[in-house]
Image (spheres, one colour):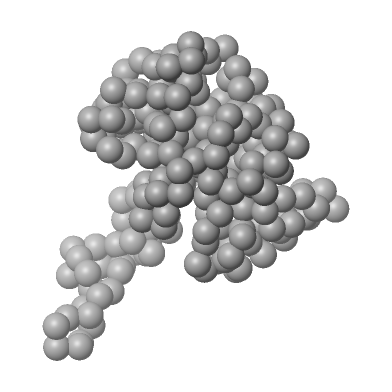
Length: 232
């Protein structure tokens, strides 16, 4: 069991593009429930903790099996606050009360399609011991990345990488995007760099159909479609 890993779900109430998204009904249950249930089903943690400043989110989280020891200070739940900051606040609170940890598993509720197997794979990669960070990644269509275009100062458009990658898709190098679904870090390394992409970074690949990050109504509707196709 991952006794030295604390699993946390940062779930603030505010969202400008999709208000209240963490509690929106997604194919029959609140969106945050999918993350909590996957973390519990992974069976690698002594508990799943939710970091939130919102009493309603806390109540729903506890109803679905998470622990919410206290409500976060509002200043740790603003739109410009990194997801690891409320998690570290709770990490320190737990350490002071006899639950120390060596690492943090951060699971954002905006990735409701991740599976328990995805989480186990991320933890297994981290526990190999040769990395300080693990993030989940998904392949990008090479044309999306290498054939990017951007405007010049004069308003004309150009290939972002000039003609360096003007090649057919089979000839383009593979690229991946961090999908935000799984982020794991050794606590001293996370405190030192202030994000999950520091030196000694490892990855775990998850497929596109389990890697949707919900930021807009379109993302939410896509997740609902995929979930209903799983359970017709």
